Picture 1 (spheres, rainbow, N blue to C red):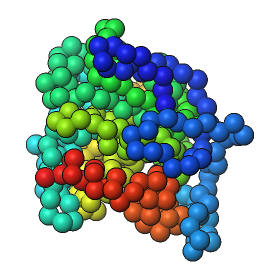
Picture 2: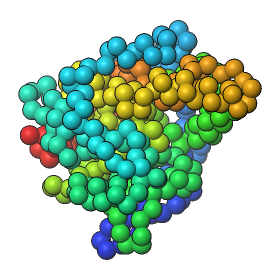
Picture 3: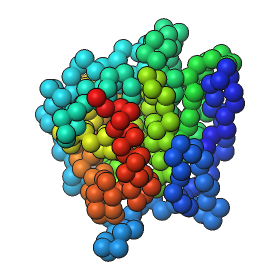
Picture 4: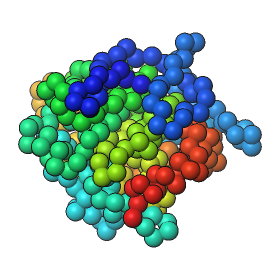
Length: 344
């Protein structure tokens, strides 16, 4: 777990060196230790099944074979489930929304104001910080890489602010993320490259970063009643989308509402128009010919991304429930505790 220091009873995240990790046992309830693998880096391009009845290796799909035109997936967005009433206006922070109100299979719903998702919060201003305090957000979970978190930290005065934890998803892909951003800024990005990075993430992150995802669940299990959690990455759509889909699945939210929430990022981030705007600006500045399709995956999200996520978990664990129990070590009691805490 990231090193913590006490600040008026609120731990504050410190920088630390990244290290490859693997799961070496079932993390205990509310135990926030991250175990370190001293033998080498994790696999990245394929997932090896762990259940006895699985014999095939899951590979990320060919992105060009699966992608449609860059904005076409928006037609599948469900305005009814992804209500604008869940959008949170947070100064300096993009793509912020409350998971409250999403429906479960058994007819219950998430309590409002308990789990919030967003993009990175390093540019949050004083008004935004005041909003966090008013909302009762006492814990922030940062899913960005160590590099991202140290280069763009969210800062509060010493001893103030929410408890902050860094559970870095895609830590081993940090350079690839940076290379993609450099390629977009220089006008040399290609659609097939940006697409491939995100498809691979949805296929491999659940397996490769299970200890970090389990740590997120430990935070949720330990969160005091009536105090909220905010989870974020850089854009609040991919790593946050994966983590949110797993949390919502554990809570029993319908697949329809999970997808509707997932695709809200396209609307909140204005992915279609921003992709065109960025491509035009970069091409004008650099004399390049980068397409909006090359930029769009860095801004938007596809139903196919979520499908890749579900397919990879089905190939290795049979179902999301199997993943929660086998890969994360969550017990039936843990699942019930989560539902008792966050549902109404």
